[in-house]
Length: 413
Image 1 (cartoon, rainbow, N blue to C red):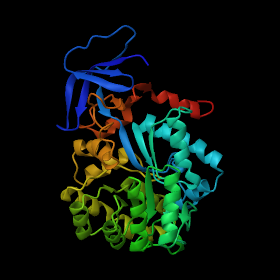
Image 2 (spheres, rainbow, N blue to C red; image 1 turned 90 degrees about the vertical axis):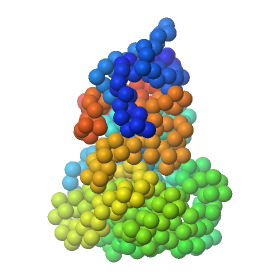
Image 3 (cartoon, rainbow, N blue to C red; image 1 turned 120 degrees about the horizontal axis):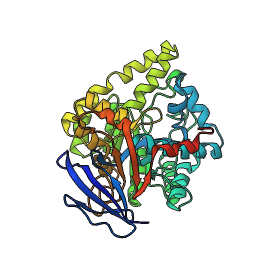
């Protein structure tokens, strides 16, 4: 790989939460070699990119994505989520993998996402996706894979959508977690509360599903192998139980109380709200005319912004995630509506998300020694978050990708 210099670019600093003008960035062997206010000399064969009047930021993180069914948010403009997503999860693995590849490229090129935590898929498909990228079979963003989602019999992601493994009792939980770790999962994911996919069949996000002992067993097995546990958790009661059992990250959190948020702050438990994805579930049902389901969702969706506002005020570490229907850019916009500045929202999508998944030593900032996972924008996102609509280039370990490359996934484009 030839050296690369991005010249005279406005470079984002996550510490000062500001851009430094007229920087030269030297990239060598996929890593940032130098960040200089002085002009850097180019070696023979070095590629030069003119960054004048452009804005360079670290690559973004999506900490809660399901790549195999993310296409629902791109192709289907209407219709209930619970129908489209369920149909995708029932497809053969070969088709779901094809969707996953197209979707991770779409996130990378259209949203600037260079790291994805793939938060659950049947048959360890997300681990296979990660390994295909790691082994150089395909190019793609950094993948952090959970393997399959674990739920109780009849629990979330087993009713209304067939997307989880059913496990019951401490021994079965332990054995299943060990099996997933044998497959080399990076994280373990549990559903400790009900959710939205099965709400039309009597499931409710307020329901607590796993017991304390079951969650504690999963955490114990994961931590023995230096792996962490993320939990789908919408209810406050389920979150309090999971936190006391030792989990490492709370996802969604629609109904969290201030007391539980205080416990998260006390124990340094990060939070990935996935606001944009959850809101779109409600919007899909409402637009499709499913009034009964939409009204059930309102009582879960509408308190969410207040929860996130309190989490921001409490100083909880917050990261960006989309679930199936959202987008990282919309997630940042919703964080801003909840009280973050544009810079704080950008940090949530970069360095703070990197910290949540223990990657802050490798990516998330523009510093020497870090992977050259970067996004070049045409305008300043600290002034207008909509500048993310003007992505010019994405750099993944120093390799340049342009949005036009996405045409390869659409016949006739």
